[in-house]
Image (cartoon, rainbow, N blue to C red; front, side, top):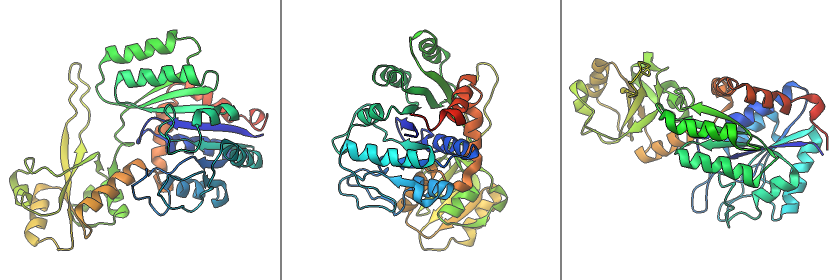
Length: 361
């Protein structure tokens, strides 16, 4: 049987798609044809599921449509293109092993509940990993020190000997040094603990440019086109920050503020991350008035217009922010750069893709 690399994660925005992309391209570069299998779609029961899963789109383009498959769907969600419905552990094992055998290896993306199997899933992911003898890359979406330590210890307890590395991603700036020191201490002193990479919150990875926002909605630029490269880290419906010429927008229906993080202050003792307004996105069918366009121009910000409903636009922006498209290769390269700063992780990725180690039993 070909080798299986299993990507587990603890929440959205963990970097799972970027890591899978890295592994798949490393394998392709060495002459393999890896299969990609996603265990479950991102939507839960009762949520709307996009017509095409963003990961299937990405890996279908990267590897070929016949090598990117979905294993099973959530109850109440209709089948999506590329889905391979399964109901038992043996079914899942067979599908994964077929893909791994055909190309020498397979990359499998799990669900965000790797440590607490959901009743809505037909099989246990822990059992699946153990039966496959898969090599696990776990991405922890950092929330608190306690949660990350729990993830580390769970890896050690449940998947001992199978985990290649734990990647704690999106650690905020600044994070108290004492908390990270405890994570580092576990990394050094716990027996059989896998290699660990600590990845800080990154402006490139956790944002969209104004130009990307225009393409994904789509939206039209009314003024401030020179700010297309400004990176937007969050969106706001607040009115209080609207000062000066922007006060005219306070009573504008369907307004979304586009917030840009400013450069981090690196002076010792200063840890505040400042923000500024890079643009305003107006939604709805009504065309913005010349007065609004002139106010945005005077304030030096971008003004965009999208004819869709405001909350539909916000949902679309959030979905776009946590998914990855082939056109966003710069994000994959940035993520790879951050991981490879840790020589242990660099060694793990190199070993994972070595030709003489893939395809064995």
